[in-house]
Every structure is written in C-alpha cells, then in structure tokens.
Length: 112
Image (cartoon, rainbow, N blue to C red; front, side, top):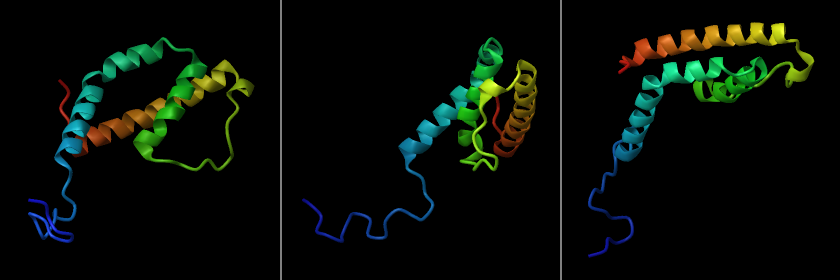
C-alpha cells in the first residue's frame, strides 16, 4: 500500500546527523583500503619524477585538507629547478605525514 504525501512508515524521519549505512560502509572500506595500501602507494610515488610527485600531491591535497585557495596564484612547475621541486615535495611530504599521523591518532585507525 503506497504512502500518502507527507506520511511515511517513520513520521519523525531519520534522526539529524545519522549517516546512510551504505555510505558509511563504503567510506570505511575506502579508508581501510587506503590505510592498508599506504606503504605500497608511497613506494610507487618514490619511483615518480619530482614533477609528477608534486602534481600528485597537489591533486591529492583537496581530499585531505579541503579546497585551499592559493594566495600567489598557480605554480608553474616548468620554471622550477629539480632541486626546488624536491624541496617543495619534501615539505609537502612532511605536512602530509603529520596530518596522517594526527588523523590516525584521532580516529584510532589501526593498519592491517
């Protein structure tokens, strides 16, 4: 028997802040995959050229930090030396590592 408009089997609806079970399960699966395969991804990244490493980090940052507006505009990687790119990469890696460690502690993520 169909519901009439404005009425349902649960007239109070889903509680505020409750999560969709399927989305929650999918997020947990993705999180576990990323945590469990982190070292393999790092190994793969280490085989990339410096330019590709920077591009990868720049592409991944919004997922970890949210969209951040650049104050100085876009960086043209073609104008940087390999040494400058390596320095930027090391700084980004340090920030990412600290962020991952803090996230791991705060969410009690256990590898493996």
